Length: 233
Image (tube, rainbow, N blue to C red; front, side):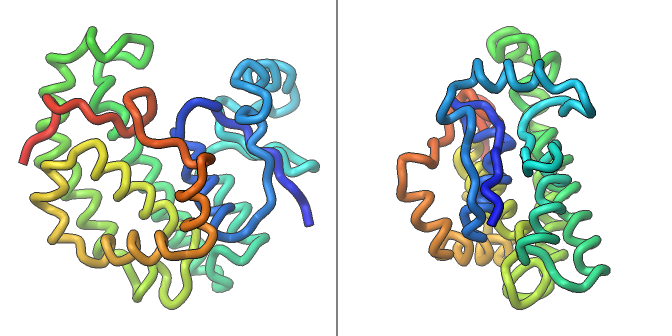
């Protein structure tokens, strides 16, 4: 069985966590390269890749190829490790859901960096407050409502968990950290998503991973950042 090399920043969960969770739940062997060698090794590895180089981490070195972008990585792993439906139509639908999660995560990041990613949050606090209000009141219900309607059974695609479910787990956990007041006010509108979050938490691989020191906690360096002034009911 292949042991993959996963490259992502060593200090944060970030987008790499969506890949880690799927691999942990599926008992898929991998080495978290930057966690072992440091983020400087990640930068050096990226610079050394000249043949179809990844734009940014996370990326997965399979031994035969390098695959970047979360949804692309999960599509690959889903096909090869049974963490996606066998039916082609369902697989494409799951990929669509994951791409929509990617869109949502990009907007999550914009909440605290609405002006520029190269600026500090403190340099764009006023704009962040305006963006956060629209995000809480309009964007969160829009995305979460669509995900809620997309659930086909106990899991996103029916009777068995998939990488989409581990991504929903991370999304709900992150939003609870980032917007505890807002999530408390609206979470009752999304019972299927909360049920998926709870079921994923009970998967043996996820339970063990989250109980270990390999699961870095949410913090104000990652994508899901809690700034009290950006949260409200």
